[in-house]
Amino acid sequence: MKKYIVLILALVVGIFQYSCNEDPLDITQKGVKSTDLVYANANDDEAEQLIAAVYNRLHGSGFSSLDMVYRIMMNTISDDGYSGATFTDNASTYQLLNTFETTSEMSLYETLWTGFYQVIYWSNMIVENLPDDTEMKQRVIAEAKAMRAISMMYLVRLWGNPPLVDHVLGSDELKMPNTPAETSWTWIEQQLTEAASVLPSKSGIDEQTEIGGRLTKEAAFAYLGKSQLIQGKNSEAASTLKSKVIDSNLYGLIDNFDDLNYYTSDFSKENIFEYNIANDPTTNSDQGDMRGVFYGYRSEYVVIPDEMIPESGWGYGAVSKKFGEFMEEHERRTDGTLSDRFNGTLCAYEELLDESRFSYTTYGRKGVYNPPLQNNAGYFRIKEMPYAENKIAGQAVFFSFRYHNNGKFMRYAEVLLMYAEAALGTSDGLEALNEVRTRAGLDALSSYTLDDVKDERRAELYFEGERFLDLVRWGDAPTVLSDKGKTIYAFYGYQDGSTEIQSKDQWRVESYTTGSDGFVEGKNEVFPYPLIELQSNPNLVQNNGW
Image (cartoon, rainbow, N blue to C red; front, side):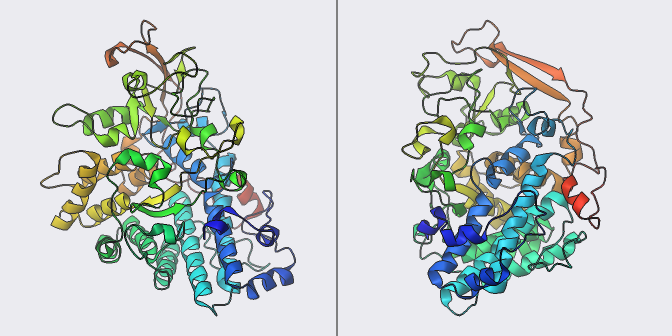
């Protein structure tokens, strides 16, 4: 499958053309007869090419990587992060997310909306038009069912009641009204169940490579359990996750949390669903994203260690003051040291300056210079950074840099934490929670509460797009995010300007009041429907407050 993940052949390119100005619910088929024939006459290899292109759309490439944009957006609106740009950068996009001052006109909403509906459309094309006359085609159809269900999960969680597009729309169906969330959830569960009944399992715990970046039976069940948990069906979620995923004994946690940041963890036993990116410079523009540009520290304000790509990044996905302080407390061992998970997630300024951990030969200096580093309060993200060893070989120009460490959509650690929540208070739930804690480098608990699960999810799944949505489904968002966006920070390094390691009480952090109302209960729990969609679809009703 790997060759199909990294190559979108002329056949697929020809039928997957899409104009960014079109309504994502109204995708014109270019030559209906010829397109239908592509599916109807596809052999097994061509069927795999078709589903590979759908996988490619879920991840995306370049600046339009869905996974990358999603992570940055969700981190920015949670209590764990800031936009990371300067106060004036991209004032119509990420910075306004930071302060909850966006409108339905913001392009980022349309990026996610269009992206997920594209996945659904091309999945629908496979389900409706590809004959199920071989075992491989049956598998491809099952993958398409799972992919459209997963994309619909994103849409329902983000917008509440978006239109359910469960088939290729006819010309008289294009202006669809909102669909009740309950209806969509029922369909999502059905699609994942049907997909799981057909999809194969790995042959062993360390054998994901033979399947590659494709969904397995257990991955479909993991998403089914997730959908049940989100709906509050805890007993059903617990049963699904335990009997169908955990008890399969086909997944586990890798030993070192920090290894998750590197290509060496690709296709490891921990990855439930991942996007395959090959270390191939001839295809880097087709498959890679722009993590280096978006995620890298802003080198005009802070020196980037040699271990990362030392060119200027845009600094998105910054660590919030609240998350840094939470991690320093939660990840502190009884002997006073910080956990392995802390060190694989973020570092305080002192660790960034520590030359036993990072090297600084490129510029001959280290630390913050040309201050202030805006939207920063002294903590720096380590997780998902553009590490040099992950860079696809043969690239010399900064803007062409792509990374071949696979994009991870779901890990086994999340399965264990979902199960611990669904099976709250049980011995099996405690065992699952402690498995995550032990790998993190923390002591096991003798009992646990929902608050323990919340803390573990926050620490373990940082920058994986779950924190904000967790706060919403728990009903915690209005309280936890009550001050979010009202104050922003700027970090100057140490008060005396030195880059010699001192202590946190010597940091110079300035705070600024934004004047924003911040998170508004009854409004900001969901995204606004993009204005362009409302203008083209009068039957679509805007969410409350937008």
